[in-house]
Amino acid sequence: MVQQGTFITFEGPEGAGKTTVIMELYKRLKDGGHNVMMTREPGGIRIAEKIREVILDNRHQEMDAKTEALLYAAARRQHLAEKVIPALAEGSIILCDRFVDSSLAYQGYARGLGMDEVLSINEFAIGEMMPDLTVFFDIDPEVGLARISNNDTREQNRLDNESIQFHHKVYEGYQELILRYPNRIVTTDASLSEAEVTENVWKIICSQLIK
Image 1 (cartoon, rainbow, N blue to C red):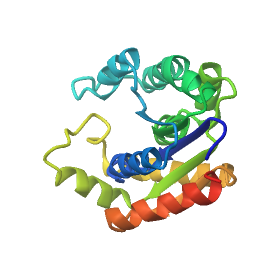
Image 2: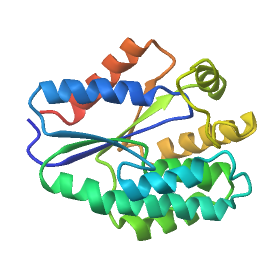
Image 3: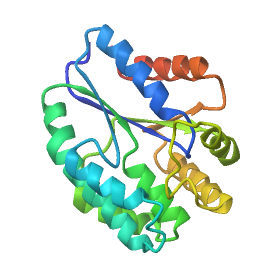
Image 4: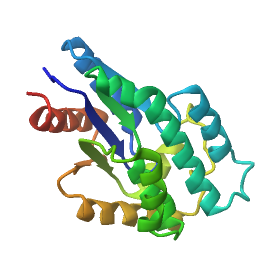
């Protein structure tokens, strides 16, 4: 059993399949007797979900890149303060769909604001709170976007509808982050079947964190 709170985040391009895998990991950990919580960014709590609606609304095409980055940081702060930090203090394993790396890849790299500049914004929001482990779901942007377009149950948001060039920049940004944080970020092949990806990620979590 995990004796202290553990913060695990999941990152990847749009359509990487993170959410489905996280739900299965949550079930396995719960069935194994672990104190576990599943959440997402932006969102997870009422205020952050409201900010999420503003950020991802397809009608908000005029949103400035810096505004976008600041809104993500604001949602992140409230989510941490209200939900994540208290759960970690209680010894929970947190499974979080996206965290600060998304801001660095999307706004810092793909939007051209600069990774260090966006990191600075987020350092004010999160302090020293960084994940114990981040799993990157590696998939070609075209494949991920095709999954979204073929999924009738998933509403396409403002970021889904960005150009393919933007999504390639996001992917490049993540590659930079993998080089920057090699001890924290572990990559898994998200082009495999759902079952295979789930098993591979489960092994990553068990080998690194579940003792």
